[in-house]
Image (cartoon, rainbow, N blue to C red; front, side):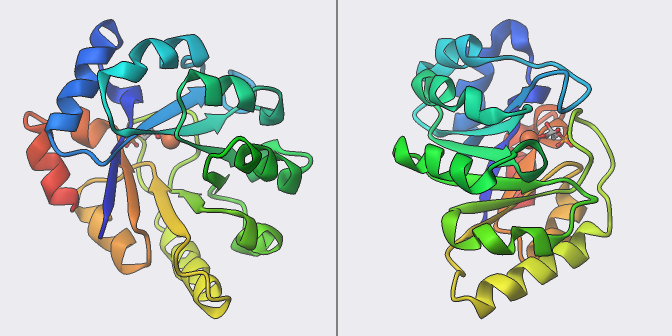
Length: 214
Ligand SMILES: O=C(CO)[C@@H](O)[C@H](O)COP(=O)(O)O
Ligand SMILES: [Fe+2]
């Protein structure tokens, strides 16, 4: 079954709690929460105070995507703010294995994300340690960008490697430029968790958008 995780980066921040409640009613499975630090990525979003302020707007899981340098400094803060799962970037971690276990030691599922130009082979040493792999299908930092087609080859390679290692339970997430047409491509290539920001929040009917992704 495909999991749909609308990204609140595309929501109206002036009524963020309401936007989250509405997207739950529209059929979302997880709430994707993009944290940007203006250093790892060239944009700033929000931090733990904003996340905890909207935590009670929904019962859905908060899927926190940390686009921040040295995320190990803040993982406990995001867990305390209400993250239900945390994903860190391979490129942002000096000690990736340690950071993934820091997340797991807090009782949360740990995810690892890679940028479009990072090869799948670099994930091999940590595949046993993660609950989710996020293949970025755009360069992280902004919503509303176009899907990078080479991502499909990466997805196929990741699925092969997971299957070969008996790890088919690991979630394969995609993020960036996902709409009805790219959704069908990434699903065929092995993705089972689809993040979508502008396609869902920018649609006249977010529930129709979510159904079309499914
Ligand atoms: O992590 C990111 C961007 O860095 C994403 O989660 C975006 O928020 C997705 O936006 P769309 O491409 O779906 O508009
Ligand atoms: Fe994201």
